[in-house]
Amino acid sequence: MDDPSQPFGPDRQNEVYAAGMLADQTPDLPASPGELADLAREALSPEAYAYLAGGAGDESTARENRRAFDRWRIVPRMLRDVAERDLSVELFDSELPVPVLLAPIGVQSIVHEEGELATARAAADLDVPVVLSSASSETMEDVAGELGDTTAWFQLYWSADRDVTASFLRRAEEAGYEAVVVTVDTPMMGWRERDVDRAYLPFLDGEGVANYFSDPAFRDALDAPPEEDETAAVWHFTEIFGDPSLTWDDLDWLREQTDLPVVLKGILHPADAREALDRGVDGLVVSNHGGRQVDGAIGALEALPDVVDAVDGRVPVLFDSGVRRGADAFRAIALGADAVLLGRPYAYGLAVDGENGVRSVLANFLADLDLTLALSGYDAVADVDRSAVVATRER
Image (tube, rainbow, N blue to C red; front, side, top):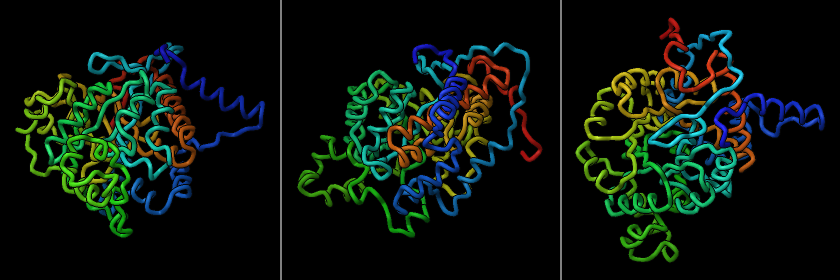
């Protein structure tokens, strides 16, 4: 997709309707994210679905993420020539064809046997950038090979073992990842009742640890390689996965380890945004981890405007948590996000139909975004600003 003005929406509609008219075919996957989630539930084991779909506590944060979108309504404008649209955005001196990246979702092997490799192939086919999780089921090098020239960023869970963290960063640079996204809201895992009730943590089954088991620094700390003693390797992973002792001062060390742009994911408070800028961070992701960390936390979209105002255009601000449709992406962009991260919907597509399922979800999402952009009176994502939405009284 080299042409940033491709008509994603009409093309997708024509593809679907032509198949219906000429071959009496309906899409394999539903367009509705809710119906897709229902199909994923049927396709997955109860443990896998709970891990993918669940959130912290009674999942009030996940619900609040969705309610936050309903508090902002789009105000369409008319007669503004939207015959051609440009969905491209520029981030870190690179032009992305769309303002959407696939959010880092780990342990995709519990969703589909081809995991991140299938996701990468679908993303590459549509040239949708990917943020790969540290906890991926395939190595960062193998996933980069499937992505080819498609933009890829690497998400870092900052390990308690500094040697592992530094090694991950070196490997990401060598594999061609263009930024490092440091998830700062997960120094330890949140209280997730669905997983606790099933006594299920996929890492203990050796899932989602490919980057660790293949890492020389991680392997050097073991008495025996993972191939010989997987149980010991898994328990070592649980011991060094996160580091709850981290402070803002540690960012100096991290920045010394890499030349890649450093983006902090998990920012919700404007004071944290200002602190990040003072520490030389290159970008932020407003996110509450899809509601998976703190039950009762603020909806991520509710936090976005204040963080954007605090940043005041000095670094890119991306948005994550609760994005389901193109209209959601439009509203987040209107509130100041430079791009959004799409999470669970593509994983549901992966569960239902592998690579083809991810491709279908992405095609529908981009179509929806393109049509929302046009029907709201805009021909370029770059022109969408806060005047495109209005707060409801509920807010």
